[in-house]
Length: 423
Image (cartoon, rainbow, N blue to C red; front, side, top):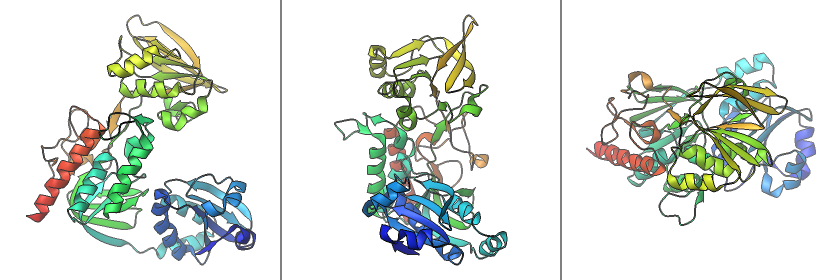
């Protein structure tokens, strides 16, 4: 693997045959997460593909000419031509492999695959999930000198990383951008010395034997496991939702509100998330219509007062969506009044759905005791029904789910684990 500057690009990359190029930056957590994957694959594929690193901050002109606007970004060249996908952000090993394999003959792919040697690492504790609960558990375990590893399929931060503003987390006078609060938490845990394996594919979870396999080849064994996988947006499951997800229907205002400048959007939901995110969307959109199934909102009073005072936000109560359609760039939402059964169709430029969350238990729910909604039951020490397995944060069965309650869960689980290991 070679690091180059922009004056070497033509010779090394454009005339270099098959090349994978990593544009990285300093003080960049996603770049740090990518580095060991890129280096490992350079060893495996090095005879077939050249691996090159470029420091984006000192080669901005080159980066701009290639439409590289963030770090890390990996792009692939074959005899001077761009090929494959442009990979950015939390880049997974599997996505790198897919693009590398597409550049070389099948027989070489088989040969390289045979050279991938499974590895096994052992820890005292494995934390599965890098939201506030998992990061807090990692911090406490690290400070207690417990050998731990934090594993996440995404980058650390969880839901808060895609939340616009957070105004109720203690210690901050001004509301904090969600991604910054996630960054502070992650960096604090990392500086302590916690080990991270993030932006990975979790291919197997065996809670009974305390084994987690990542990227199909790396086995992680632990004495204790803390589950902190959180929850994901709940879907409406109405016709058209699946087809237009990411193409007219969004579940993340922070990600997509900026694309609706001076446009009209529909927001489905009436809880805290729906109302707070509608307030954020109003910074961009010209009109927001909130559709809610009940006759009054469920959000906290402060959020309600702001929404009702916002001239851009309008409300349709006692109504539910029944279908989504798209014609050109316009979305059409068929809604039904739940009391009269009357239906009508609304036109908008986009739709945002915020109707609650569901626990992320797909990989390991079989042997856990769950409540009626699929959340994991624990005792006051966060222990599940499986010995040595704990659950924290939004994944756990409890009355309230906030960042502060997730942090509290992570604290309790880490202290309980530390005491058990000490004994």
